[in-house]
Length: 73
Image (cartoon, rainbow, N blue to C red):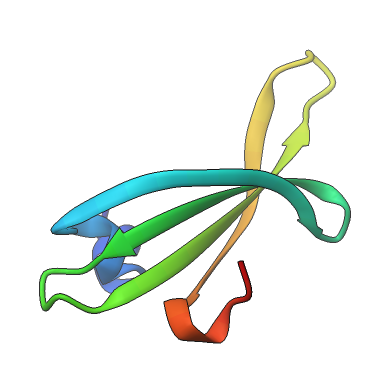
């Protein structure tokens, strides 16, 4: 939780969030877009890349958070 608090404050205490499209924009991996409004009212887009594990479960392989204006929809 400390990593999320320090590295991803937009995710830790958002005003709101909304799940967006699932794409393959992060190295061809399934990528979940999440639209976030942080505690200060700024808009962000989080891109969560997933990879399938040997036991067939899915895990987050990486996340990138950018200001919403910097990401194309």
